[in-house]
Structures are given as C-alpha cells and as structure tokens.
Amino acid sequence: MATRLALRIQERFESLTASERKLATLLLDRPDEILTFSATELAGIVGVSKATAARFFRNLGYADFNDVRLQAREERNRTGPVQQVPMPAEAPEGAATVPTHLQVEMANLTRTFEQLRSDTLTDVAERLATAPRLWVVGLGPEAGIARHARITLARIRPAVHLVSENTGSWAEELASTGPTDALLVVALRPWPKLISAILDFARTTRLTTVVVTDPTNAARVRRHGATPLICHVSTPGPEASHTTVLSMLHLVANAVTARLGGLALRRRDLIADLREELDPQE
Amino acid sequence: MATRLALRIQERFESLTASERKLATLLLDRPDEILTFSATELAGIVGVSKATAARFFRNLGYADFNDVRLQAREERNRTGPVQQVPMPAEAPEGAATVPTHLQVEMANLTRTFEQLRSDTLTDVAERLATAPRLWVVGLGPEAGIARHARITLARIRPAVHLVSENTGSWAEELASTGPTDALLVVALRPWPKLISAILDFARTTRLTTVVVTDPTNAARVRRHGATPLICHVSTPGPEASHTTVLSMLHLVANAVTARLGGLALRRRDLIADLREELDPQE
DNA sequence: CTAACTATGAAACGACTGTTTCATATGCAC
DNA sequence: GTGCATATGAAACAGTCGTTTCATAGTTAG
Image 1 (cartoon, each protein chain N blue to C red):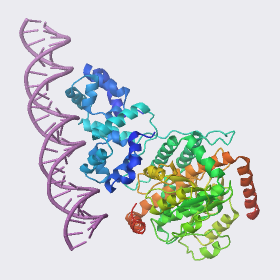
Image 2 (cartoon, rainbow over the protein chains, first blue to last red):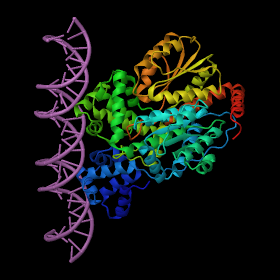
Image 3 (cartoon, chains in turn brown, yellow, purple, cyan):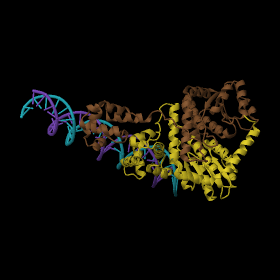
Image 4 (cartoon, rainbow over the protein chains, first blue to last red):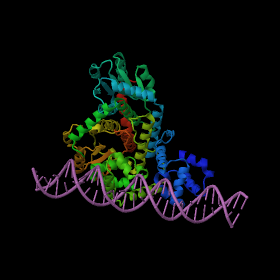
C-alpha cells in the first residue's frame, strides 16, 4: 500500500519546510485524501496558503497538482496483488451465513484464477473463436450452465449449438460435426460416464475440445486429449458452488470477444438492437 | 454499504431519462467514482453533456454537484476507511486479463453480500421452503440461469417448476398457481417489459415473489410488491457478469436447505442414489 | 399534420481552483 | 545594526468546472 506519492514524500521529508511538512504529514496519514480533496482544501485544513500547496507539489517533482491526482487515481485502480483468502473450515450446522458464503466464494475465485495460466486462456479463446461451429455440452446439474454458456457465446459468434441433454440423442446431434469444429463441455464431479464417451468420440472426430471442470477431473480430461479449465467449486456444505464455473465461462467469452474484435462487437450490437425492437424499451 | 446517493438513484431509476440512466448506472456500479471524478468527467465517460449531468444531480434533489460530493465524502468518513476491493476502471482494450477479471468478480461479490441482510435471506428461504409449489422464471439471457436454479432447487424440495421462456405461454403455465405458491424471478438489466407483467400478475394472484436483480432495478421490484435480492454485476467490458447471480442463488438454495433440514437432505440423497443407478458409478 | 412537450447538447456565464508574481517576514552571517 | 537567502501569504491571473440559457431534435396528444 505504499503509493508513489508517499514514497516521494518520505524521501524528502527532512528537507521540507515547516508549512510543507504540515501538508506532508496530512498526506502520509490519510493517503486517500488527495483523491477527494482539492489542493485549496488541503491547504485550508492544515492552515497554509494555496500558494504553498502549489509549490509543495511542484517541489516534489510533479508538474501539476492535477498530475498528482491523476497518478493517485491510477495507482488506486491497479491496487496491488489480491490477498489470498483462506477457505473456511467445515461448518458444523447448515450454517449458511452470509459472511461465510462470501468468504468461500472469494477463496474459490482466487484459487481458480491464480492457477489459470493466461496463455491457456488465449489458446482456448483462439480455438473457440476460429472453429466453424461450436458445440456446447452440459449434463444433469450442469445443463442450465451449459445453456447459459450457449446464450452468452451465441451473442458474439455464429453457429453455437447446444447439445441437448436427452440421453441417447447426442450421437445424432454431434454426427454433423467436422474436424475443425470445437466442443465446449461443462462437467464437474460426479463425473458422468457419458461425458467420457463424448470426449472419446470428440477425439476420434478430431474435434478441439475444452472442458470446464473441477480439480478432481483435470487429469481425466487430459487423458481424453482435451484441454481442462479448472474451477474450484468446494463448499463447506454438501452442494458444490457453480459460481466459479460461471465466472470462468464469462472470462472465456470475454477472451473470445477480444480475439474476434470488431466482428464480435458488431454481432453483439446487432443482437442488442434486435432485442430492443422485440421488447420495446424498458 | 448502501450510500444515500445510491438509494436515491434506485428509487427514481425508472423515472430517469436515457442519458440520466447512463449516469445512474455508472454511479451504482462504481460508487466511489463520485469522490474522485468531476461531474464533467462523469459526463464524458458515459458520453453525455455536462448540462445533462448537472440537471441529473439537481433532479435527484441535490442543490449542487458540490452538495453531492460533500455528502458522499461525509458518508465515506462515517463508514470508515473500509477499503474493500476496488472495482477496476474501464479497460481500454478488450483487455480481459485474468487478474483484472478476478478483481472484478471479487469486487462484485463483496458489494453484493456485504449489502445483503441476513434476515432478508432467512425470510426469503422461509417462503421458498414452505410454498406448496415454486415457480422459476428467467427470460432471454437469464434463461440458462433460471434453468440452473430450477435444477438446484428441485434437488432439495419437490414441485419446482420452470416457466418456459416461450413468450405468450407463460400465462397458461402460471394459471395453475395458488395464493401460497412462490415465484422466483431472475431479471437483470435491461429489464424486459414482460417481467413487469408477470410481477403484476403474481401480485394479484397473491404469490410470494422474489426477484434476483441488479441495483438499477431494485426499487422497481419493490414497487411491484416483490422482494429484491440485489446482485452487483458490473464489469469493465460490455457484458454483465452473471457470477454473483449464481452465487446468490447458491446461497438461497443453501438457506432453503437449512430451513427444511433433514427433509431436504433426504431428498438430495435420494436423487443422488437415483442418478447413480442411472449412470453407473464414475 | 400540427401543437405541445420533453430531452438534450452547444455555448455563454459566473464561480472557483491552481499557478505565478510580488511584497513582506523571518532567520542567519558578518 | 546591514546584507542576503529563504519561506510565506496576498493578490493577480489563467484555466477549469458547474450552471443556466437557448436552440433543436425527438416524442406524444389531439
């Protein structure tokens, strides 16, 4: 939390004049004040003139007071590394308290995305973006998520198909896939056997396959020749949390958008316009 | 964490003009911006004129923009420097970097669940747990989420129905609802008009209604006589993130489970056994 | 189609902010 | 004491910000 301004002040503190030290002390004590107060106000608080304040910031090496504020603002936006959040221990009761829930979700998120390599992401995005057709699969509890993924991706690229969850008919639906198509699977524990079959089929058809899954299935996915995107979904309770899965899919969609550039944006705008027409504003 | 400004905006959101809504949305998404940005800058970010911005704040009941800033400043002091995770500013490129994504999701999660009152949660859980039948609705982009909610809830209680998104047929589907049934709606911005109609119908049928929504629609939900569960979904990019929505639904499901106790657990185990039978282990 | 109304941005205006200039005060060397 | 250097505030100045006015585009009512 050491801002560049604070460091600069500390270096020169002894060589500052009395009035300047008043300002310096205030800023070291409450670093955020720069963002919210004007130079005049700062001067007023410690009882020096505006002129002194102006000189102070110039003497620190800034061109302007505006310069100071812009830097401070910018520094706050890229605040340092996210602190590691500990996963809460097993809750005795079905203690679904709000703070516990929040902490669990934060822990899952940090684990998930600190582990995700950004080149894996761009690689996946590249393949999902360029495939002629994209098939999305999610069985049982993941069916809703898969549907959501399909909706999201269909907004930024054409030919996104949902493989229905009617057991048995998936073969017919996937039959029309070609070797350069891509397959996006959402499958967590407990791992449905059917997914293994689908992955094997995808491998023989030479489909590019990405599987959003949990850590326990990562190795299995690799064994099937697919790329895993690992999401931590553990909870103190009995049910897994799909939160990180959705977050991962959102990130993937963003990456695909970035890869496709204007193409995706135009498609998205087109769809937005269409929606607006169909459902008159409001 | 609900500032007075945010509340004031939420109350009047629907009566705002298009340009004003752009400003309102920005301020709800990133409440701290008022402290650091000038009104001119705010106007510039969302692409409206300074004049509109000035009118906007006056229409909200403030004398001045300065008035706004003073109040915001004062409130922050009262809240103390609880510097939570800051929301990153607009990314220039489609810069969907992993760390940025993580930070955005963390910010949304903390905002969402620090604002959620635990008695609201238990109240909602009580009503969703005890209703004879539970109906789940989600239109357009939220259809997948709704389906997921239905799956999740159906594991812990009987008679959970998904109202299909076929426009027009919802009336027939909801026709069989009774006065003590409950309705769970997922609806974010842009608010579909159809949802308003459904909420009005629910009110006259005396359904208990819970709406998972974003801050811009909270007041509207209350006006329809329903209980809002507010999720922060803002992102630097163009697409909203449904992550917190899913997290909220997970929490609600947990709370319902806690309320139902052994009943829910037995049902869940039963279903797990069934699944295992249908899809032989592994 | 016209009239009234609303929403909006461009531009004029006044208020305020930050910088610079200048005169004064303070401290130190001699 | 005088001379010199530095620190400081008052005031002049230039620039920016927020407000208001006014003209225009878009919408609604009749």
